[in-house]
Length: 308
Ligand code: PPE
Image (cartoon, rainbow, N blue to C red; front, side, top):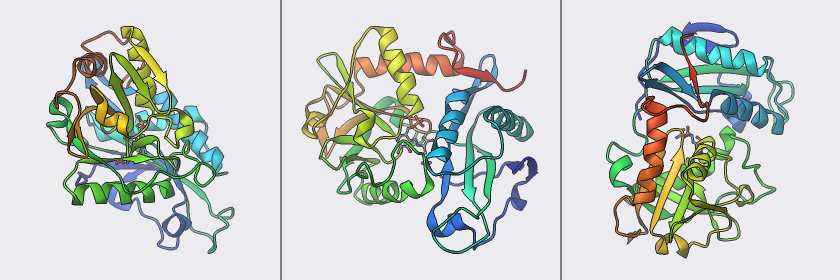
């Protein structure tokens, strides 16, 4: 997705012009991938701009930092306020917010501890992650030839820059082979997640998603959709999913901040169910998009107004 510049970026406590938000090439992050980050959506709801699940996103940013021993010199409340401030400064009714915490410039070598922990918050315009058609018609995906990281190699619960080396390998392979996205298996061969999304499968009305032990990111859209599923009264299981269950499912869909709730219509060119968006996926989307557009009541308390 090409980047449309916003006016300002929040950089270590100050709003600076977009073009001035620069770092040195010898920064630790550039050499060793030492960053943790978030992706958050601000929606243009009927009641005004509102951030979706601000608190859990900021909490996960601090969790990721904790795992990698990166001490963030702000409180979660300060980061929440900084996110709202940055959105207001850039005057975008809807946007994607990218808070990024990284190890800056100080010393060379793997040990990052002397390198300063810097914080930036950018907002960008970002429409449909998997294309305009994806939400209604679904996407074509493959099972990646790359596995997701094994537990005890990279901690999947951290949303860490370096972890996305694996996602890049998955994504490039999928696109070059004519798919929109790839699903990785975990080290034991069970379904894990997409390069930037969690996954749900449905068969005979039962909805299943891989557990956190399957090397997945603890997705906030995943959590939101799990609440929607319970609210709609469907049976939900968190359990290991064998690869072939993807082929035999009636419906499969992806969840993520960028991808939102996107149906999958084929896996490895095998049709999922009828090859079209299924009725349960549609009913989950109706709730999700109803809440984020403000057409339905925000009954779970997911939206934080930007101007208040
Ligand atoms: N798994 C991975 C690996 C992942 O990157 C994401 C988000 C998710 C699951 C879903 O998590 P959540 O957004 O909390 O529901 N991927 C982010 C980055 C995508 C990108 O290309 O950059 C996102 O959706 O913002």
